[in-house]
Length: 213
Image (tube, rainbow, N blue to C red; front, side, top):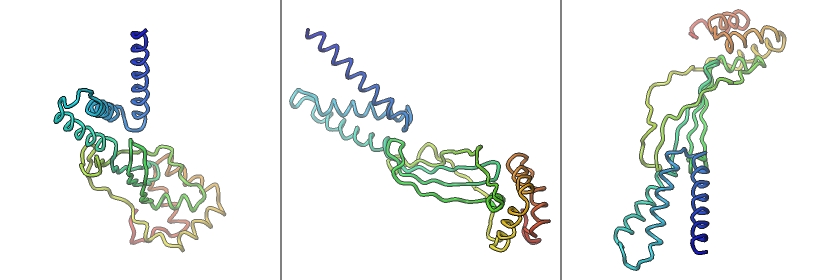
């Protein structure tokens, strides 16, 4: 009977541990979840060791190490970049996360002028091919490690796309839906920006002669 109870308890403990690991792995990743499980196990050993006074200092050290490890593995500040290769849309997301789950997000959008024109034409890009990559991760909010990707990002400057030009584009989209669909196809499907800008220039005068696209 005792052996059966011990076996049942072990099976339940193993099942609970596996469920906890798989649950964390879905959001935090398998490597991070494994590290957290090891740290939790070490913490349980340090707290629950029954022999009074046995390995006191190693247990204290193990408990402190486990808590620090859990913090650095479970909590982070991450920077993600989303990019649409069709309309050149960019979006940055800065997230505070716990176990990979965002608890606070800041968003910075860098629209491309072509994307803004498609929006005003009434045929926006759906960003179906949008790519997302992890640029930076500050483990425990203090330690920058993998991933740590640096580089220069060149983006379009839409400042010269004024309200007057936007009004012309919206009027063009309302009057000629077929042309709007054609312009959408040039950017999103064919990636033919040269022809796109030529057609826009002919119909709206945008971009001005002193602005390169």
